[in-house]
Length: 200
Image 1 (cartoon, rainbow, N blue to C red):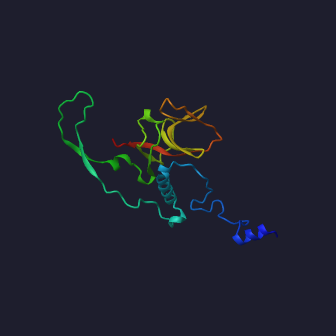
Image 2: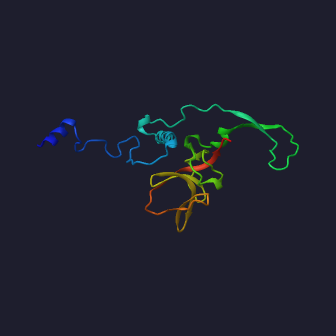
Image 3: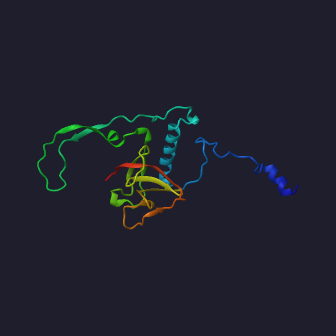
């Protein structure tokens, strides 16, 4: 045994069969690295935590996922009169009902998450940089839907195109070309975008 081997043994070196086996993590399946924008790390971790819990994973002792804290309903007045974007006209200002934005935007709470937009590839669909998207992962992705997808390790929001000649991810900005998705590509759709939240 040479000196280098002795030093490696002293340091504990890599041993055959050592380390975590593939599929032994909390999800029970192999994992791989994915590049995620720094601004989205917290959203991704929250999504994975909810996904793991919703699968009745042993890591959460078989409990079905429920949000840690139910949001307090916040119902604000919704006026019956519509706001004129053109020539103004007198309005009969009356409150038609009380509106809770959470109830309006979120249909399936356990299957919904939010993600913030980076970039301008979807501006023609009314999605701008900095917007917060409401994403429902219980909706089946279909042709024409705007989706959150991971293509070959890259997270993106695009319109899904499913045609007989193949699948594409379509930007809604003429400055960007369509993205072809070959059959051998690794494409995962995380969910369908159902709403956009924007602060002016």
